Image (tube, rainbow, N blue to C red):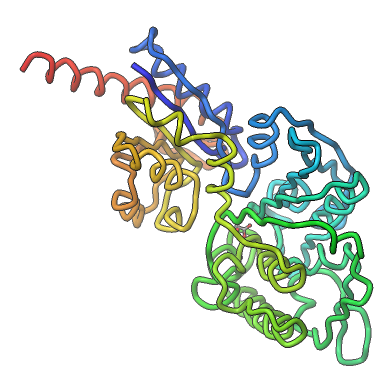
Length: 383
Ligand SMILES: O=C(O)[C@H](O)CO
């Protein structure tokens, strides 16, 4: 029996490889002799560099950059096996995991560090950038990143804006004349973890603002700020961003990349699936297992489990997903290729307890799924 295990990370708890290993351990208790293929996946958010570097035999590079609250953090990026392509994930510089829950405030957080990672890659003379966006602590429309790359955002008095999503309320002018000229010679592909638009009820602020610490009042302020930011980008560049799919990824960073850098936005999971050759591996599998920290109705907008399911369903393979948590509205995922989904929680506890127990709970749940799988196999053999 061949089992492909292709999960995302469980954010703030386990890396994608740790998740895959825990699932394998559980399955091995029932199927010790099965062939297991573990593929740590990512969708543009945290883990994208690891997946792409490992898949292409590239290398990791460390870089001290400005974190979401202005503090120095040790970020990283990857040089892919071809030696010409940089793979950068914005979460490695501006990710939510850098800000503890009580300090989360998307009015103030900046994506500047992501721009600094891009500068580090340009310094190495790369020709192409794959920029994974998602998992951010920011809602600044990627303005911080663009500031690091030389763009100036100004208010009506001609003053350069402060950093953070809240400051964009005062934006009246975007000056691109000092944009780093090296960017003109580099192609940028953006791996978006979601396809949400910039603004509105399914936009960056409304959907992802709360997890970054936005109160309902802040969501309104941030949404209005991103609307005037997007409108101004359209006016200055002539590029449409307000209605573009993915412009709302990573707190609106998609809009800056599309509008100000003419980058191409793609579903991140498709880029990772291609680099890892997932289609070829699932083709001959008996079972495909995926997972993510949380599975909800938003998962269908480009998250890893659905991308993996799409790949598996091309070859009509069964797909099971394991999640730390399932929301009440998660069932829509069944119409997108996930045959069965399981929450791994084994008891009622606190969130920190759930994060801490995730590895063991994954193993236990995987063991039980394997046991049901074997019972089903035995009963069909006995018919
Ligand atoms: O960073 C975020 O806002 C989410 O991951 C969606 O991109």
